[in-house]
Image (cartoon, rainbow, N blue to C red; front, side):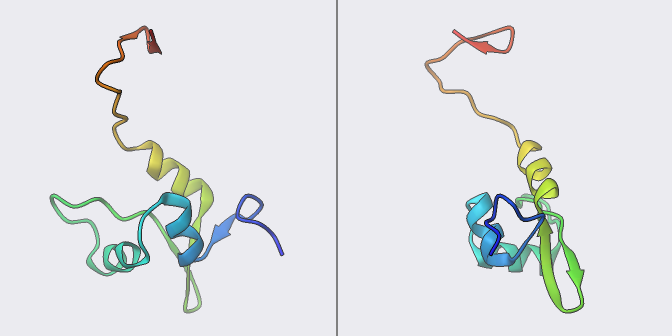
Length: 81
């Protein structure tokens, strides 16, 4: 059985674990779509009745969020000092 690292399309359970969010977040965001003041839904595909999330899409979705720097660290030219 392929591990999550080797798979291209992930199930809802695998996706929730991969992105660190709950399954209910994934379900709710699929049903409600992107709403103001809410975390946008990650892109998904449907194969028949099965919902799948492409790992590349999830990586891009995660990269789209603002990265917080630790308050005590200073950044010079994109590198931590």
